[in-house]
Length: 114
Length: 414
Image 1: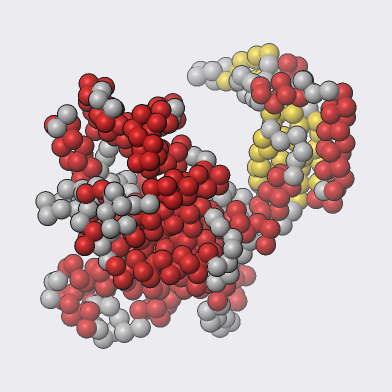
Image 2 (image 1 turned 180 degrees about the vertical axis):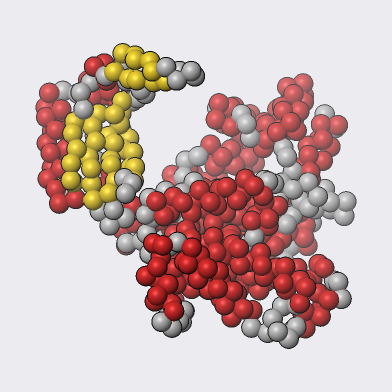
């Protein structure tokens, strides 16, 4: 069963990350790399995403005119930093992977249709 | 179908006991029915829907014709028929249909089925009130209407809640199986929380007419006992069962003749069921012997302190506060802190307790018992004016008729 894991963070997480020493940040990157390595057989795709400040969003107004705005869809502090496409037996396996995600923050697990 | 003795009761129109008989049958048969249908269809979501429909059909027929001699077989046959209809309508199930037509029978009960069922209904990925609704229907045989009545919600709202939960189980693929050993503590906690929520809803119902709905509380206790029997090496189900039984043991004394709530401190302890208390404490000791304390065992121990005390004043309050300290180390919630403060008052006085309570204002502002407790402590420290305001705030927030009467009474005496 396919799911997408979306790796999210909010203002508090971003702050915590910014205040990390270079050493700690390096250690964090290593933990993340290890997570990808450990779960290699279950991950079928994914990417780290560019900063939300470089995002562009298309919305529709009530009269169905598309509106283009600078910035991400999510308002305020919340950011999707990256995603992984996974293929596992069921939700419990997806949960196990998500719970092991080192940076913490939040991980959304969304089933892939079809 | 030959009507049974309870069928004749139905025919004679003794509605109360007939409905009780129906409820008992559904309670006894629901889990087995759901497990059978899941095994037949392979999809929990669809199976659960069929079970819900089957219960409704059964109520209509049995009220008219009486409860059949073998109700379990009747339910299974009816559910199977609906399942086949359903499979026929949906092409993706064509293969399953072929299996059944070839004479695939619903197999015998497996011991693990009931556990699998309970754990699936209580999966943490489902919203808490969805877990409760699913458990009540699929495991205890409540109809959508029964659940709506129990939770003072519309039938449409409950139907939608069940429908969403079934869909999520299917679309997010929540597996129908026992959790792995390392997942078990968290998963078991989720199950016990559902059972306790259902118990409390029955124990202090928010329905206007009946302040104490025994059946939901008793059904939750019944299921907890079943769970404890299925998991004999786990202490927390025993702890929860002891807690429920200790609460139920006091039920005769909780309301006076006029249906008003009697506070624990004022209850006539002669009316407590001493045999039930002894039996509950024995369960708690059995749990304790396993050497793995947990929040429900601690809450039961607190309830046991009350149960063993001859009067409110003779309660071992030092022990109660100590137990709350332990509970805080396990589940540091504002409500536990509030309850600890109530006990603290008995050993440290109202000022110390009030200080604790005031600190919870931010988190518990929407909780009527917070305001009621605060009101009492303010009165005890002599601040009658502020106490009156707090009591009014409590009254505003409580939905339960018996509690409203109690709080109104207290407001009048301020």
